[in-house]
View 1 (tube, helix red, strand yellow):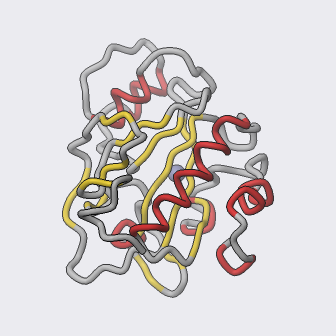
View 2 (cartoon, rainbow, N blue to C red):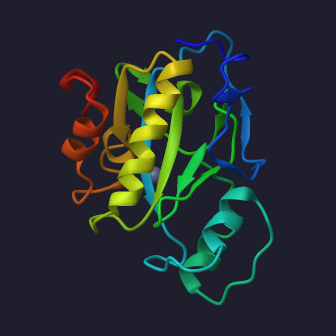
Length: 191
Ligand SMILES: [Zn+2]
C-alpha cells in the first residue's frame, strides 16, 4: 500500500486521473474503518439514456430540469458513489475515498452491516441486465487496482450482493470474469 498523502496517483482520497465533480452526498467514515470492499453499481438517468449530464447532476447534487417521470420520482434522493464511469469510459470522482459516500443503503457483506462505512462505491453508467462497454471495464479495472494501492481491498461485490432482494445492480450482464481477468486478482476477492 502506498501512503495516502504522498502517493502521486492520489491526493487526500482523490484520484489524479478522474474528473472531479464534488458531491455533498457524503459524511464521515466511522473512526478506524477498514476500507476493504469495492461495491459495483449501475445507474442511468433517465434509465437507458446515456446522453447529457442528468445522472452527473443528480449524483453531484446540482440542479437539473427533467420531464421524465422516473427521474422526477428520484430527483430529491441524496445519493452518490465515490466514482461514476460513463459509457465511453470517462471517469468522474464525486467523493473522496476517505469520506463515506451514500451509495449502498441498507446492506451487509463479509459479516459486516452498513457497507457505506467501509467501502468504495463505483457506479457504471448502464442498466441492470444490459451489457457494459469494454471502455468501462478498462476504466473500472484500472481504478480498482489504483484503489487497492491506498486501501486494503479484500472484496469486490455488486450492490446486488450486499443488498440481496432489495437491489439488482449491476445485474447478470456484468462480467465478473472479465473484471477478474483484467485485474488478475484471486477468486476469493469476488462474489
Ligand atoms: Zn446500486
